[in-house]
Each structure stands twice: as C-alpha cells, then as structure tokens.
Image 1 (cartoon, rainbow, N blue to C red):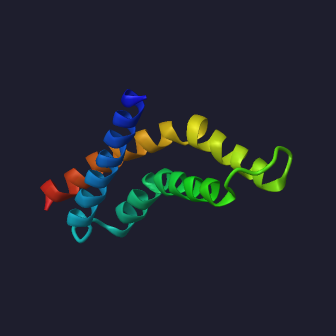
Image 2: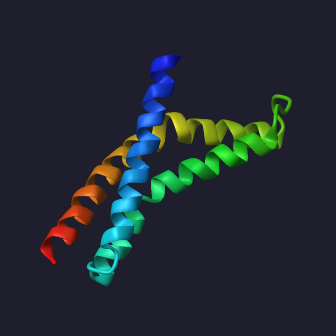
Length: 103
C-alpha cells in the first residue's frame, strides 16, 4: 500500500513540475505548441474528473446508474488513463524545456 501511495505521490509531483515548467515557458511557445501542451496534459484532467465523479456517488447499490458511472470511472482511472498521462507528461516536459532553452 505504501508503494502505491508513493507512486501516486510521485506522479502528482511530476505533473506539478510539468505544469510549472509549462507556465514558465508559455510566452516563448507558439500557439500550436501551447495547444499541443494542453492536449498532452488532458489525461490528468480526466483523471481528476473521474475521481470527483466517483467521490460524488458515494457507495451506491450495485446495478444503479451511479454504480455504473463509478465502474466506468474506475476502469478509466486504473486501466486506460495512466499510460497516456505518463507519456503526455514526459512529452510535454521535453517540449516545455526546449521552448525555454530555445529563446
């Protein structure tokens, strides 16, 4: 359990670092790179939305609409979104750092 929490903490710190680097290099990037940076970081926003939606449902009975929503959010959070979030974070970091160095 500790290793999972440590991994989640590292992912949150990495996203925070990339967002900070993006804010610092925002003025130096072209409009296309700005849009691409936002799109690369969008899986993180989807993860946050899934967490909020899951928490709003509480503990619903099985078969209800809210249970199905929680199930879809759980599948997204565990199986689908982590890899695009990681790849997007690393790609955005490289793109933001190059923009800061180039100009």
